Every structure is written in C-alpha cells, then in structure tokens.
Length: 389
Image (cartoon, rainbow, N blue to C red; front, top):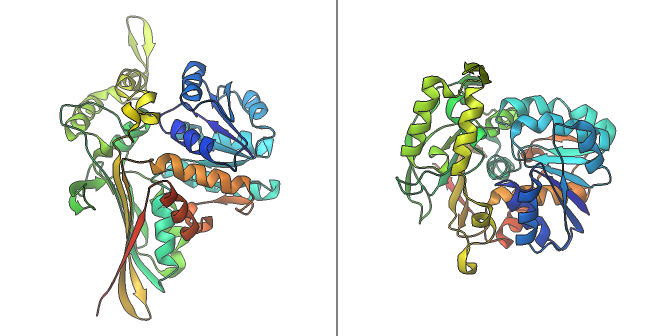
C-alpha cells in the first residue's frame, strides 16, 4: 500500500510517518510537505527505507491532486484549517482520507461530505489523532456494553514540563485556537459554548502522572459522540485537558498576549506594512517548538519522555443498573498515540476495512483490534467497570 502523509515533516506528522515506515504492510510512505528540507531531515532520521519526499503546497489544489493520485490513503497531518481543502483534493483523486481532528466546528462541516465520499467509493475517518481519536474508540467500547448512556467525560492528562520551560506540545496555531475559542460541551441534550480555561477540576491519573488540574477545551470528540450515541439517551459530553501539556506559566503568558489583541486576525498597519497580529504571534512562538530530532530519535537510543494518559469515563445503565466504565490509555516513554492512531486508521482505510463515506472514529473503528495495535507499540489500555447498587 502507498500512503501519503501530508504535513509529514511536522510535529505530529513525523510521528505518523515513523509508525507507517515501520509497518510491514506499507510499501511506500510519501512525506508530502511544503518544507522540503525538514521532510528530508525526517527521511534521513528514519533511514529512507520505503520513504519518498515530495514538496507540495496543500493550498495548491491541482498540485495536491497530482501527489495524491495512485495513493491508497492520505493521512492529513496539516493544521486543521486545511481539512476541507485536503478532503476536496482526495475526493478528486479518489483517495481515502484521515486526519488528526477538526476542532469541533470543522469536523461538523467535514461530516457533511458523507454522501459525496460514499458516491465516490472512498472512505474518511475524521479525528484519528491522540485526542480526538482514542477517546472516541474508548467511548465506543463502553457504549457497546451499555443499554443507555448518561454521560461521556474525557480527560487528556499530559505530564507538564518544568515551570520555567517554554515549549509547545503541538501546533502553535491549534493550541492558540484551543486557548482562545469557546469550548463546546453537550449538556441536557444541547450543545453549549463555555468560557476558555473554565470548569477546573482535579483529576487523578495513573502513576506516574498523578493529580492534575483539568479544564475545558474546544475539541472534536464533543462534536460527534452525542450524535453517534443519541439513541442511547446521552445527556452530557465534555472534554478536559491540563494546559495542553504546557506549563501553566507559559499558557498564562500566551493568554496575556491574546487578551492584548495579538490573537486577532484583523490586519493592522505597522510602518506602512500590513501585519496580521495572529500570524506574527504564531511565527514567533513557533520558535518554541521542539526540534524534529526530539520526536524521532532521543539521545542514546532512549524512548522520548512522553508521559500521557487519555481517560474516558462513560456512565450509563446495563440491565437497569447504573454502571461506570473507565478506560485509560497510557503512554510512558514510548510512542505517542498521536502518531500511532492515525497510522492505524490510514492502514485500515488503505486495506478497505472502512466502508465508503465520512465517519467519526467511534462509528467505524473496532475497539479491541485498535487497542491491540496500540499495545504492540507500548501503549496499553486498561478498563475498569464499577457497578452501583
């Protein structure tokens, strides 16, 4: 199979590229990126076996279609703003599609493409990163074993860096949006907009993570889970994270800049030059993104210091009794699910295991085989069930 990783030289794209390159089922991985130099660097780190590099601008529709033609799947690891444009190119090239998420609103727009993809005989799985992705499949596991669902609460716990370390855990543009845009929740059967960085609660994660402060954040899981499990009577769905895996002090600095207008998309005149404050802010903050080497090949062949647990708690009933499912997917100094999960989805799409159309993960990803694939990469999932009398 031939899989194109668009944005394959980026922070999360290189992780997906790495996992695909290690898969015996994949014949060729195409690293398609605007930054050719960075793409070549990724290819060098991974040994170039079954890897090729193509420079492409995702906004150049015709060029992107040419790159996609003949591929079995496109794994879109670009910033979520590009999702609809990339889906359009995949539709023309007749190539199946997956991405890392659409930050709620874009995901909802992407779902409207279902009939177009179905008619073309191609498939798409939306939001197959770490989160969204893993929590959707966790929710499906619990939903399959419950008669009714009352609530789905998702907690994305990431080991924070030291307070004095200014570092961004993934795309600066996406984090900036998650920090400033109103997070959506589903309560009492309705979607509601809340305040960013609100509804804090302390949550216990599996050691070595421990207790972390969690807050609401705009995310794609909330866009689809209430719709998928509507018939089971779901009344609540929320997503919470701990400062996006960054130091609280760093988040506060970025928030101050945003409050002062640096997150604005409206151009301003500076010395006769038109400048978009948000673009300037993203460009400057991008200097605090870790180098590619830290993602792919840590010093002395040791695994990277990733410590992360994605927990989904699903409350409902089974045979008339209240039940709580807790699923925790833990990463400790191993592969990040943000790279592994989309790699698995891309391979399943390429193999034709997903029916034609556009779907959220919980609708088409079989939980047990998916969890087994994660466990092969050192990412185990634990399930606990509590029955209330």
